Length: 213
Ligand SMILES: [Zn+2]
Image (cartoon, rainbow, N blue to C red; front, side):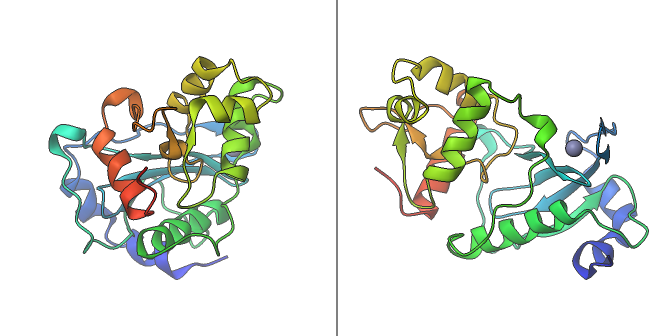
């Protein structure tokens, strides 16, 4: 499959390597049982986002570089590939393209119409509470909605498991798509995001979705 968006951007790779050399870059290839991963850095209104994908699904989607201290959103920035770790030689992993399209749509409007990109099953531990919480959240808590840690715990079958829900959210590898930013405290406060390091981003995402409690 040849896809224009990413392959076009890959020609700018050397320029982008210099431009973003001051941020944390993945220098490793994860060998998934479904094949090697590739990593992409894409621009977005809330700063650069790193996508890691193998042939079968996403392994990670994370906003990189900024913490609350430096958070400076810019709605004029489009979602576009700035850099990719390995050249694709005309073939780009389908989940990475799905993720790029999802992010482009997400930051322009609502994502109600878009299918969730493929997620690599190797990132979930089948039967674990963490995986259950992440899957239930993705399926049940839609764009523009919020849910409390307590209610999400109840949806997962154990309303006393608030702390375990909090842990599952902190360990969420797929930001935005597995929408841990939509989980707030029972009293309506935002709660922490990325261990409290990116709470302004959580606030921005919920405002973007018109979901501020
Ligand atoms: Zn994989």
